[in-house]
Image 1 (cartoon, one colour):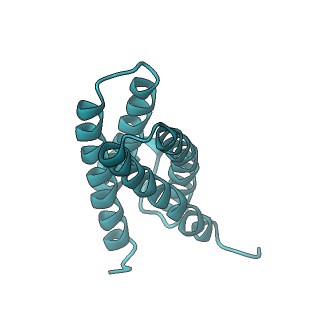
Image 2: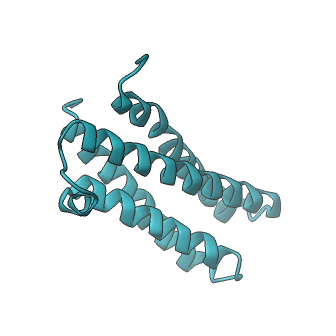
Image 3: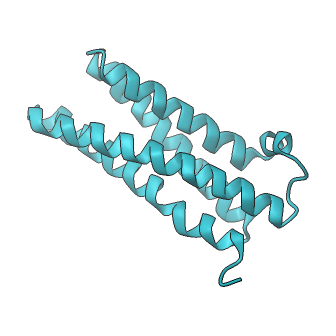
Length: 133
């Protein structure tokens, strides 16, 4: 085997983190400038972040199973890192849907702030779990 399965998770996990944080910065710029074209950047970065987040969750599950951190799929919710990352992904999916419904932008920005904070905290827990920090 060329790579251990755990390596794939470490390769994929950086994409959603970067996309979600970049989307948040675009949201901040949109609020400061009110340029309509920036709104498209928020949608695209959030949408791609959701896609890569799902891939990262799947590869994380495979890595956790291979490294025997978990024994079955139901154990994934016992780990704080896993729970927070799955929760933040659902949070971003809800935000993505609400953005398409012309929801109040200030409320969306507040929830976007919470979602980004969750993903940063979950990422920190994952780095501790993998003994990277």
